[in-house]
Length: 285
Ligand code: URA
Image: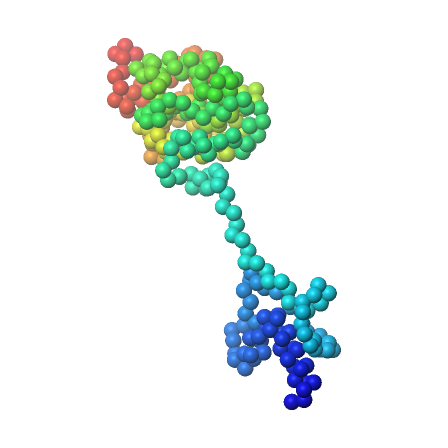
């Protein structure tokens, strides 16, 4: 072979090698699944333009920014996507191994997941006995709760305390929490998206405490645990279930403050809860 032809050929071979196209010319005769196209891994794929026929073969290929046919710098293997250590991990499954109320509170953090964070003063996580047999779930903090960071400490809360004591229990015997952990402005009802964002924390609280009974106080708590648009006036006082935990809905204490006539209905409901927990029901009631 003439030296100039050999040099020309070697130049092209170097060129192909630099473009990682060696298999293309080495394996031409060998049929392959992809019609002899060079195998390139996706992460290292280099866009290769067809070699123009009228180009003089390079004697030495040195990638330069001006040379569109020069090998591109090797693309790095894409870094793995970051694993976000946030609520999304448990929001997806809503089950966390070795979960605890402390861990849930830690995950709530200085929550900014929904607009309720904008006007809240304190996050109201929940309070009471972490091993309670009975959990009361309300709607969301009001003004007093937002100031103190504790659930049911305002007027409705005082009535709830009386109800608990009428059952022969103390507040510290039970656990009290809400569907949303931040006060909705002007005490409006929480919006569906706010409930959806916050509910996973409630679900985890219930899973961790695993009480013998859950009492939903009012329609919002009932909807959060039993499904939207369920009628509390139709279903209150009946044993239902939330993820295997016996659950009953009754009227919210704030409703009772406005409608004292409904107190009798609530007492009937609470007596069923007492019976379920094996508590002594006062004879004259
Ligand atoms: N109403 C609720 O639903 N929850 C509270 O914590 C206080 C009032």
